[in-house]
Image 1 (cartoon, one colour):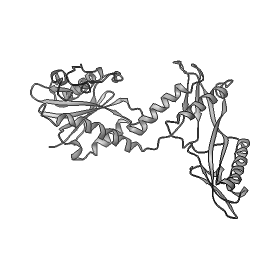
Image 2 (cartoon, helix red, strand yellow):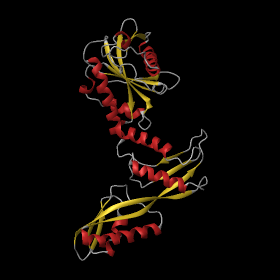
Image 3 (cartoon, rainbow, N blue to C red):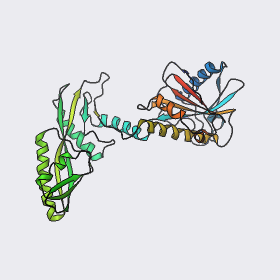
Image 4 (cartoon, rainbow, N blue to C red):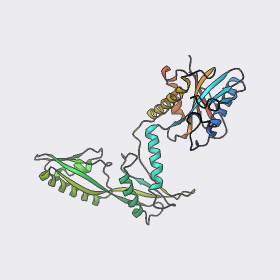
Length: 346
């Protein structure tokens, strides 16, 4: 398969409209192409003019002609040759898309007011989205910690934690464990007790920013271990510490809290997931009939993905197997003002 990159327009296509695009509406309902689809079609026509020397134009929007039949979006033609194309929007994949949605939601929801901007640093292993109960606690704690915080300053956000301590077996030496990756603060209690204990806590990793809170936790956990010897388990509560930093106010306005978190996913795997999912959906439009001399899918990047780069999508497409592209003659990758064309021998 080959690829050509040529300019496809002067501006990046705008975000997709908040209503279904052509091809997603119900049977019998005609819907005009979205602005994004029109921009993609124009970009591909310009690309084809430059690579073939022929005058490619939109011949027809198939949803207008076949409102009651699943069809590709458009047919492009140069008067001699024609291509039926189905448009699909690429995303960052499930993990990154969920993370991006959760981070944007938290930015507004945790904001103590409408003007100031903050960054919250929870334990490094935290995952988004957060439990709703934890979100409400964080929001109320930030409101207190941010009261007098100046630009460039930082404050401590106290997070209440709860856990069940289970007594597993008696032994002369003490060992207290939990299932978190960062468990040094739990194991540090081991010399203070005798016996084997498990701390069951489904929250994020443990984090303390001060010796005072760390010692309070050690005392509470040691006491809970002793209590669990008599009833096999005991409940324990304590406070952990997350850092809140005050940033420069946004010039556009709109305060918020940026929660720093990581995504447990490889970029390459996310790109493969996104391409194959949209490609699989697009190919269904070509299963029933032949709509033009050639069949193609156009994957658009730039509106619904912010983490995955066009280069990652291009590498994924280059590695597709014949089974992934059956029924297709070409695949177009549209990103910003560039169009990449991949041709598949049939």
